[in-house]
Image 1 (tube, one colour):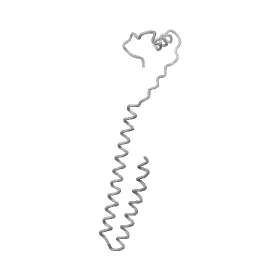
Image 2 (image 1 turned 45 degrees about the vertical axis):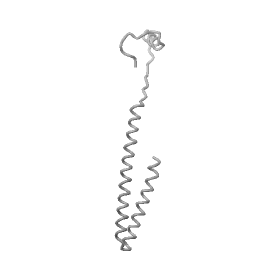
Image 3 (image 1 turned 135 degrees about the vertical axis):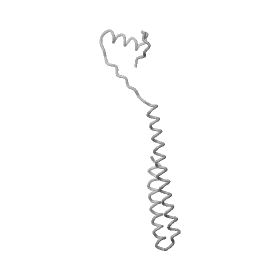
Image 4 (image 1 turned 120 degrees about the vertical axis):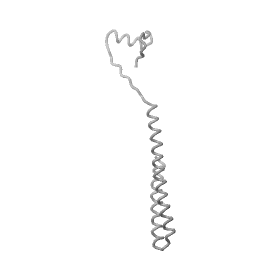
Length: 105
């Protein structure tokens, strides 16, 4: 984000300066320099847009990978009274073994 905030105004000012220079060269009848500055401006903005797209795509992929691998699951066990509650607390304490093949989640 810091690079984006630094490079965006820098690219905008550079493009503006190139276009102003091209206008001045057109007024002075030096078309070759004006065409060169216009080509430089187009190249600058093309590279800036490509860098922005690639950068955002890369960071979006990092974020989705992080989100996929760092999920937090919160289990809410309701308080039940009776023999099932006692059995659940004994299972949680490790005093009883679960007979079924399923594991509690």
